[in-house]
Image 1 (cartoon, rainbow, N blue to C red):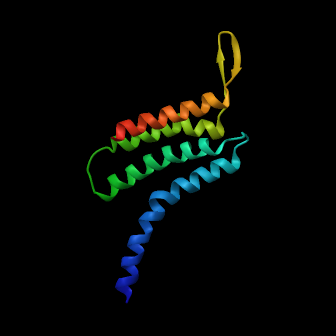
Image 2: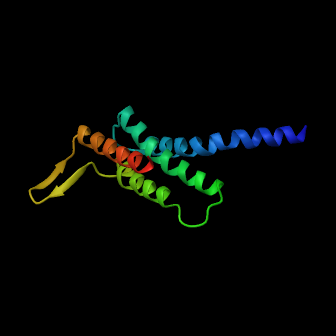
Image 3: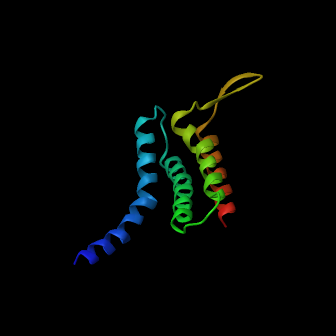
Length: 122
């Protein structure tokens, strides 16, 4: 009987490991953000985190040697586009002054980053 429980744990653990960690990270960031975010923005941010984390876990489980290049690139996309959604300022400073970004522009940049990562993945 102990063999069956260890096999069951091996099967259920990757489900949490692949999706649970990005869910927890996104939920914590969402709970602490001072910004009003739409559901689609949160899904896009979660997707960027999930792709980066899942590709790293896949690389680690296969026992490859070297640098997980795609996981690093996807992680940088998450750091640059999704993390400022929660923690950053939603404005930019230009020569003409400080300008607030619209929610549509922020959402469009998240979609563009997600499309870029998915294109690299394919």
